[in-house]
Image 1 (cartoon, one colour):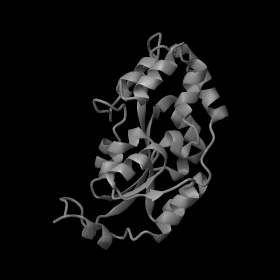
Image 2 (cartoon, rainbow, N blue to C red):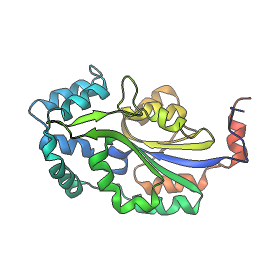
Image 3 (cartoon, one colour):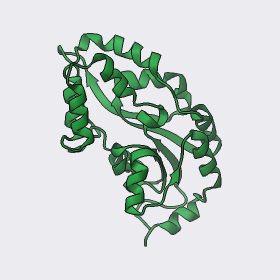
Image 4 (cartoon, rainbow, N blue to C red):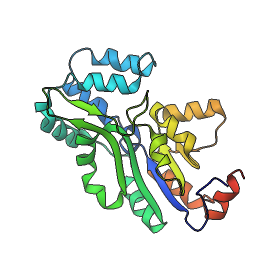
Length: 230
């Protein structure tokens, strides 16, 4: 049994990625498309091809956006965001099943949090990259970052050592979190990588698939402890 994980104190927590998971399309890309300076596509390509670390690349793109445009960015994000079908239903299902819902987003606090505001009653906590507007351009801070990622989702999961950790994600930024999870729901890039690694996961397209997977999963405390090595 892993130290600190016992059946008397076990709590199920679902950690959910934001861009491309809660949202259908990456909201951060929609922001860049409207507000980033010319050349951001090349920087994004370098990130996707792993020629540049995600943390560095994202910070560089935002460093080219004037801080004075923050309110415009928030308004644009609220206007264009599309939520994945089943999101409100999953938020309603989790408390009924004694599951805490946590958002683990590599997006930026100043537009992720307003977009999620209508759903805050169903969200236990939101982890994001932090922003600063005291200078001419937008600066980013990474309280849960690592050398490569602006938000290391493994660090987020490590904040919940006594929990049964359920992770839902779709992209490269979710790999660190997936390594710490007890149960995985995956789609897109991360699903392809998990296939290559031979890792078990539950595929999903909508959050209705996640609800179905949770409803049939044996994730009770006894099952959790049996999965842990002595």
